[in-house]
Length: 301
Length: 301
Image (tube, rainbow over all chains, first blue to last red):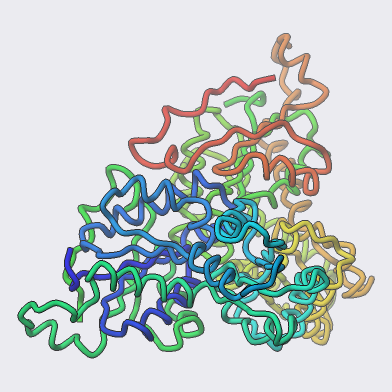
């Protein structure tokens, strides 16, 4: 791999596009391959064994693209499977969304002696205790309030907007007891949730720091690539026709395991811009002997 | 196969247990194998190609049990995949939930010249037009009002009860425009929805016939088995120790592709009684060469 290699971003479906959005803001020159496992989504109610298997299949499938970094842009998959996935691909740089979010939460908690940090996320992320561990590793004395909020993803995927009365009522129900605890920080522990960040910030009040794990994750990737000398355009290599053409803006190429049309239709809500039609990779191509020889590395224009 | 063979009931997850509940009421002597595809649920946002593939894998897996009937107890899977699945297993009796629900809706519409029939279901079921076709095949002149209601399944799986304000608001939003159309009949086109039948009936008013597709599906299975002479206890065969022991109540055995604990915990809400721990069949066992030799036919006690 080289600085010219792509960044691979994985998610169960659409949510990880909020990470891509942030990556494209901070690292516009990078090529990104995005894989949304839409045939098997959501991951939020599934077990570590199952989710870890799905993620390893997807990485194996995209390995021929020689990625310089793999981002698990899904809190559930990060929380349940990051260590197993790293162990399965030694030598491959893999990062997730939980650590950067936890780190930002601790920074935002500032100097308060025992800050109260809330986390909203899927059922599986909460059950995994990944945020608890990641926060406590950095701050022993933090009170952590966790709340699974399983309806937010289907509400966002249904296309509901933050002003919808049903969204407001669901958020009120979910956040009420957290607010009563006197939050200092609230972590949005799912890459879908930035869509509702504005209304959540209003509900918890301006004094509470609301941490967007998608944003933190993208910053973390940029820092890791910088440290490794792997940012595109930072080498002294001779420019090729290709590198010159793509200097201004890297390519985004999406893969899904089901329903490319639906993905393409809903993507702009998460990404902020339209996307080209995603490539379809049916799940059977990810299993054993039916597994395809591997994805062809050359990106279409 | 024989009248002693089991009935196989398939669903994406828990919803199909409402069909099992009705089957156990009307045909208590039957053995039932239930398969919930919890690693890949829900099916309601996925395509016909993907869902049809999942269902064919599951039937293949359970074929060694020599089923006398296969029930696709999931409206989405029935709507998207029943013809393809039937074509893939000639000679196997396979039925679904859409036709029985549509038939009951037309009967309930009675003699009204142009009845208004509403259907609530998942996004995929609505998009498939399966209910429209099934109703119009029986009654040319019916006005059909369709509404995807994608939040109801996650609300039920979150354990929310019909009296929850969020459930009421969601139902009000979904049903409002349907009620304004002047409904005569409302079909609950998802096997999860019977859980909310009471509150839905109240909202639409007592004059509207609310059709429970789980109930209709079970009645349909009983009728088909009766016609085929395949009801248990209807043959003149010599009773064995086993058949005598199980005469009063058939066995229910559950299989899931992920998280047997969660399934076992949530099952009573749908089934009305507790279940034994389900067997875990990870999805990789359903694919190609890793496919297991087949499920051993003898049922544990």
